[in-house]
Length: 75
Image (tube, rainbow, N blue to C red; front, side, top):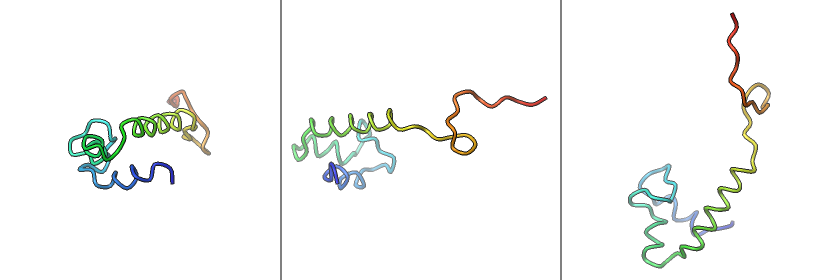
């Protein structure tokens, strides 16, 4: 698993939906502050997540078709 040390620390965060960016009592942020985890490695992990979200299509709408316009109301 890539970035296994971050994946191991994430469940120890205070909030279940922690983004490991700015939340209080974040286990990943604490590991960076103590020097147990490299800040550069966390930044690469964040960049990889951003690229993944940008390059992965969002499937919504009927039959998984990607829609960009809101549905029109019938009269």
